[in-house]
Image 1 (spheres, rainbow, N blue to C red):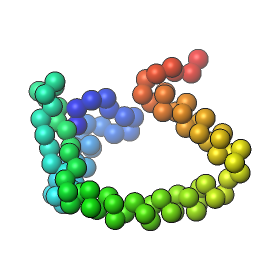
Image 2: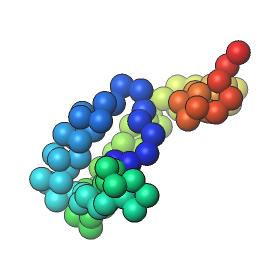
Image 3: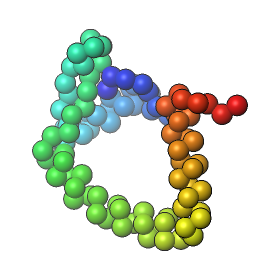
Length: 96
């Protein structure tokens, strides 16, 4: 859980979410070697299995409900917009 916080996810909320995943056996906490206050949430084998089981339906749904509804030009525009948002959220090149 060490590292940069994202907007909308407080440290407490993130800790509770990781605790729920930990109770399911899907992640384990490991200490961060560079920040004694921080921890990493590491995906376990059961967590990886759960992710793999969920992914095909998710990928199919995103394709069917998002990408199949857009023209190739709109997909290009979505990529450009998404890249700008990722840069902003990462703190790189904020819009002027």
